[in-house]
Length: 80
Image (cartoon, rainbow, N blue to C red; front, top):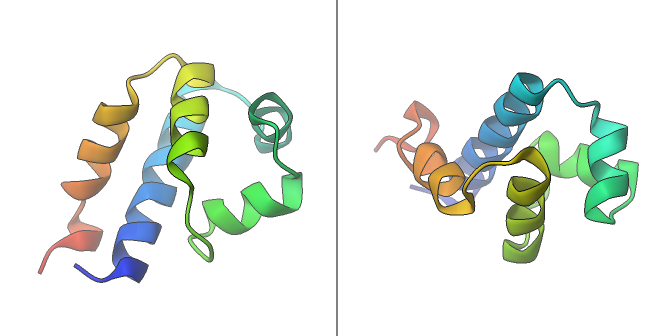
């Protein structure tokens, strides 16, 4: 798994969790404490999420951070 694949898989999992929760990206950015532009780059997989951001996002969305990462790791995007 490359770092790009991992970054994209985490971004896809965050997008899916955000959609399931019905929140807007702008609202999530505000609640997590990062700019909308920064979150947008992360959601596109251009820049990585920091561990603290994943934990905050998971908390805001009411999901387990470990599960979010596990789901991303199991993603076809990171398959060898």
